[in-house]
Image 1 (cartoon, rainbow, N blue to C red):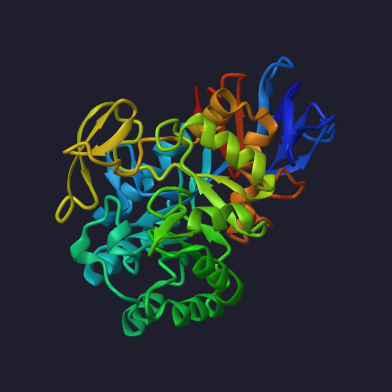
Image 2 (cartoon, rainbow, N blue to C red):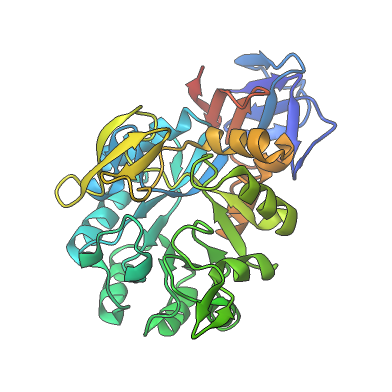
Length: 392
């Protein structure tokens, strides 16, 4: 289907550009003006009110719409992708939790079967969050599945699936340095998270291990603290200080208060701020009791006040955020201009995952992955490969 988007506020590289129109021909971006040689199947008029951007890219999500990737059902992977597309997401990275090797293998296998399915956001690659993390910083992870890096185990997982593209690891663990080298050799992005690492350990992991991404800044990592009466800077401070370190924000308005969101926007380079949902199966489902992790081996959590919590309300358990909510939070609560907030969910995550040559940017010749929304970040259209997968 050939589509002409006419009279839109088009966002690219953190600003609204001069062009008003965008032409989609044979599933690809044809140009920033009407192509007079093309017959359009559809012309959509933005009335100079609606915004148009590259499709949103979520590099950290565990599920949504009632389904979780740990259930390892290929068809349900696709249902998650369809659910997130309703909120402007056109590309996502299914994310695992700390689990048994058997469950991880099942999830990887299901991804391979689901990747070719159409009708929602594209499944770009797999993010293994754990199991090589700190028990002290486990968050909602089940401690019984947390372990030290095991080369035999992760080597076999990499053999099973070529789609592992990112791993979240606590860099202070024995064997994490070797794992970092292994990841880089396999073009996998090393990420720091669920960690007890201090400023020095994070800096060394960044410089020597290639760890250039932090999983949900502030969540499950130390700030400045005392060791034998001496103050020691933590992982959070390292995330601010290292300009070449990209950081994730769960910008749902719950995990981080407005003051923190404003601080990150003020002190981090704009192109190193990445918005992620960290959503679990309850995203888009309203309040109630849901399963965290797989149906078989997970446990119940409760969704209330717009966030997922452990049943004892002692901590959050992932989120129920969607990509539109992330942008809306940054605009409404952190006073970030819409074009810059959009950059945090399009170009920045694509660059961090080294897929900017295919995703996150509006470029002529690229696949037409497009999100259209209004001033309140209410998504009106989501297009993937030139086909509408959602229309409000």
